[in-house]
Length: 494
Image (cartoon, rainbow, N blue to C red):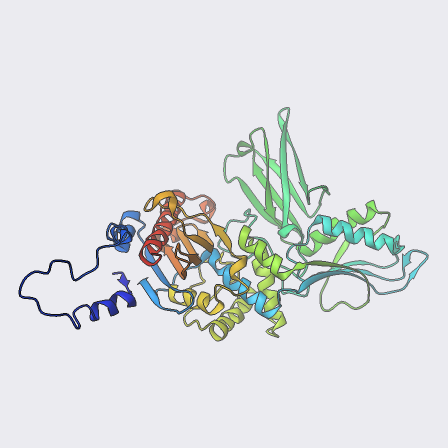
């Protein structure tokens, strides 16, 4: 059952009969005001229960909408029902990073030397040190190589180390996902290209020419840390195994067609970054041996530093493109910054959950990661709306949320309200939370969570990339979300 609250209507109802004169005959004019044009629109709206029934989602649903400034609750349905937030979790992660690291913080990737530079040669080791930059790409490594050469360096006498110990290594974000999904990569303190390698294939005669590279807008350095073999089978499309530290993939010949490309996850991001840097450095005339992983805090003199964009810009990109790697890295970096020293991703997520309870006033919120990729994270609509009200429509997070065009057949053109929110989608899980500015300028905070966990849990792991029925289910859920918002726009925006 859905409960609607309208304090204005309630108070008006209490005073409707107070102080009115008694009339023996019918008055010439009505004692009550004529209906306003907006009232007709309100009376013609379907109820929230009718909208939910029409969506036919099955599973469970919870939502809550409130005035973003006063906190007045306007309408709810199962507001304390815990459900997976999917990528809506990134909104909390963004707030966590902005509050803990600060919006002006920049992540630094450094080149350190254990010895002096003599005649262009480092008398010792060179260390590529990750500083938890989630946006480090091949172009950034190219700039590091150029800056190193500008220091006069042409080689080293020792070893070339890569150090990603700033963050605890995580092999995957969610072990329940298929191996080949690029949005489920490994996590390290040293990351490159969102820890993905580019796989491209082109038909040549009776076979295919395949390439694995770390491409950017201008560069395509080949890599050895990942390799691909085309095999004669129909399914599965991909297989993966760790071959002594090398990501060894096979792909089904029947799935290739004439050509194409896709990004695959990398399981040794530190070695991946080191291998790419070695190639780029060679192009600048700096000879380096193969990279070796290094644990613990690096020791040496800093020769070159590359700084990322500010956290504010990184969080905005994360919210816009919903990049899982960015969310996990900035979330873990924030946990390190508060002194939590998490042992793993789950430990860092627990630290963020505690922060949300203390800083945002949440009660039942519990995260398993920072991106929402795991369905083991749970959030209630009440907690999400409470967090959004605490953060405020004028706070640091709100302007970084993506503006989403209204889409609803309930009102002409989808509606004249403005939505700033974060979407979230997993198989048979769909969510939307953020702020909506109504036509009259009133600002609301809302959260809508939908999930059919029985259908989700019935999907075999090999079919979790595009399971049957999931796309249509998500489409109906998104339509419901926009219909609810359009309904609120009419109810509370006139």
